[in-house]
Length: 464
Image 1 (tube, rainbow, N blue to C red):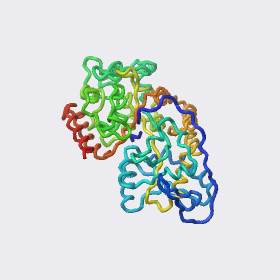
Image 2: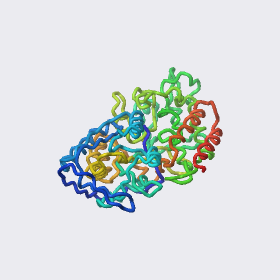
Image 3: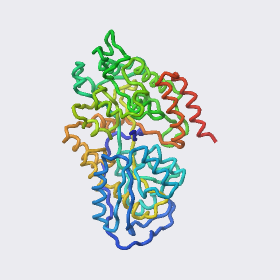
Image 4: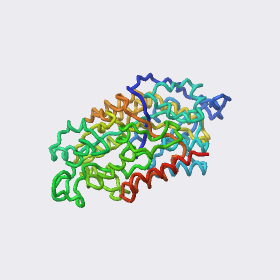
């Protein structure tokens, strides 16, 4: 599922270890708070009892259980109970829990969700308590900590990881097409003819009779292997793994500023020409239709050998490399009109529910989740890229030990070719407007200029 962006950082920042006092405390003392300009200071030294913690990625649950065990060893009076739900059920449970008063004390948060949670008063400000506890937010990869500061100047999360986008490809299908893997490392793209990227996509597409997409007689109505898979539909308003890596190379930005923009730019020709190009791949038979992939796992379709290439996020690395009978390779996203590659940059964080009845333990757990002590554990597991540099380096080493070179993902951070996931108010309403609007273009029911009207609806949300 799509995760996490910004015009961020040039090189991987050098991070110091987060120093946390993890002394055990006894008893069930009531939380002590002290008034502060940045909100109440919650005395985490009184931490005890149980903390309910939710996450949605089952692949990461073992790592965070190891973090919970280490935390409990240092804090015997606190126990962390971890619960994992699939993406859709997760957010439904969070929202319903807010209303019913049963939400978890701490949960993995997403940039597309937290602005509305702040508006609803559902998140606990961490600013004053983190300052009192001496937590240094400068230890994270460049820009990640800034993402979780609201328009009110309060901090609502500590970074846990980051992700970028790259191309996964089926090595056998690439070889069968006579395409050199080295050529995939330097593909170029433009919205007019698709560049060498589209040429590769066309050649990798094969119909039931063995004809390739760039050969005479190719039957686009009976495609056996698509040159490029479509991840989860049109991507709606952010297109993280669908189109953002292309539009980002045109110097187009989703909003007027990020974070906290108040004007969207879906009416700009750079965006609309990108969406038109994506639609052309479907029309030519090089990429499946939205209808064909809706409700299906695009990763599993790749795992069945029906996609030669697919763009997806770094959180998918292990799943994409674990499909039996499929030897997978990685390539960076193509260079576009700007002369650079581009990737949406997203960073998750852990947040504390404002209604938690155990805030001392909840915040202490968030501090540990945001520390090198936990993020190094996560990094060694090789599932995601932790937000602290030491954890990132450990993750790279862990992937390398599995035979996976993750440079196509990390090159974006190293080269400074990332841009932020859009962080604004009205995220759910924007999705409700843009998802059907972009779907309509992808399905041929509308042309890309129809997105100008959708953009006007979006921008009206910020008026008044």
